[in-house]
Length: 303
Image (cartoon, rainbow, N blue to C red; front, side, top):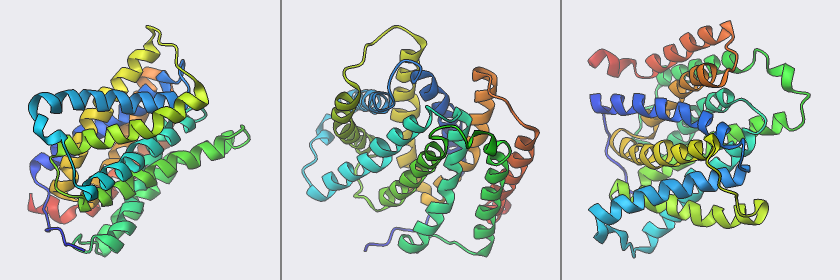
């Protein structure tokens, strides 16, 4: 296995991290709105397909020669990551969002740093994971539990709620595995690589969506606009930046976005969808941000 060079996050990496957290925090809300009219697999396939189309157009205009990828190893990574980064987690999220609030789906993404930490320990030995970093991740996850557990028992009796919550956490696991594999993938230009993954995910998921839910009826409603937004910004653009950030700062640094995404998801859910915000949310936010600071304490001191 070829080792990847050690990297230190720069100021632009922190800026990208903050931007991605905001965009992805709103993605759950847009998917929830799209589910008002479309089925879950249609929403997932539509989001991936729209994102793929947007990036393919850009690549065709700016880098047409890069679209011809013939290396079988690269194509294999693209297909695998198209499933792990898009087809599978988007399907799990869309299905889960039928039963849980959009804010919860955002909160569930907070499990990804735990998965990334364990996977990085096994497969990315150049990542420095000392006791302080581990403590920070555990502290951040404890904050997520404070955010999730109050009021959780009130929904346990509803049909499918437990399975829906597991589906959201399963999506976080998919993203974590994908983050590790992206770091190990061949060095294809990020825009081409992301467009390829999205295309592969769309090719895998679209036939399944048509088989299970039939051809969707496109209407000029807010659900359609929400689906278009989810495909272009949180999918096409944001996942392109995700590839850039993982390659420049590493998967463990990238996983920190999952601590901030829940805060945006809750805030946007409250302001735009009318979801309730409990006092414990503010306590959880303080714990989560403390965990993030602890994991990157040395970098923060250096800066």
